[in-house]
Image 1 (spheres, one colour):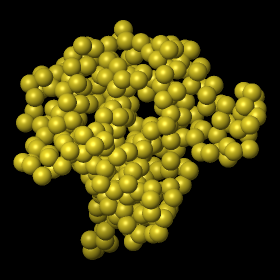
Image 2: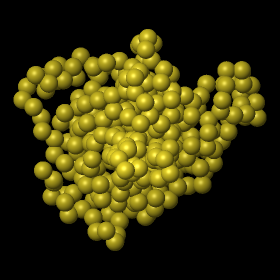
Image 3: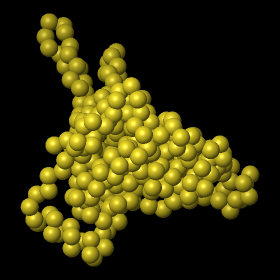
Image 4: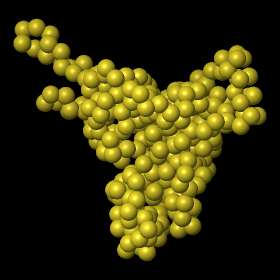
Length: 318
């Protein structure tokens, strides 16, 4: 079922106004909360990443609805959904696809499950670094090269990866180059007691059927709208200063950090800080407030850069 609000949302030749976009994203968030309880911060980060054309790494112990949240987002946001269960015996071709011999000297290309709008890389740290690195090209360039051919993935494109932090047997830590592709690393925590009561009631009760509120075209229109939001130059300067301090802390009066930082953050960290500058998802730069008059001010940038903790840019390696 598609809501009336989103069905008549956008004209392909124009961008949605801020009020309509904000109302639409509120409806999406409300629909997700019908199923997912106690993970508001996670939902907000996923919506920001979706509209900012970025990827998210979710880390938490089993049973915290990480996979269920990703599947719910795929259902509500529309488009195609691909799920890859990472295991030690995977090979890169299981992700991106391969060439198959069809006889008479001819080959055909079989595309892998990454060719979807939203890709769930479940327990990504259970596959070897060789398999994990198969995602590098598609996460950055939205394309896959198989043999001598290059294939573009459908737009919009989003990779949501999960990993379990409490087990080390049979797991492979993500390479730094892989971590650098993610906008957020979200630490998923346990629900509160009251939230857990609601979780049990919903899971053991009648199944909840989520509505599809968006189409891929709607999401792309919202993404283009975020590009029109004015960002104060001081926000850009603040983000660049923070990231530069991770590379040369002594130049920023932080000599005590020089010995504990192995690699500073890449320019992607600066970009991601600006892309998620404001602290409410429907008001962020990567949000539904996509009116050309919308702005991201310095105060908003400082709040975003100070968020840290549960959702921090994944580009800094210490």
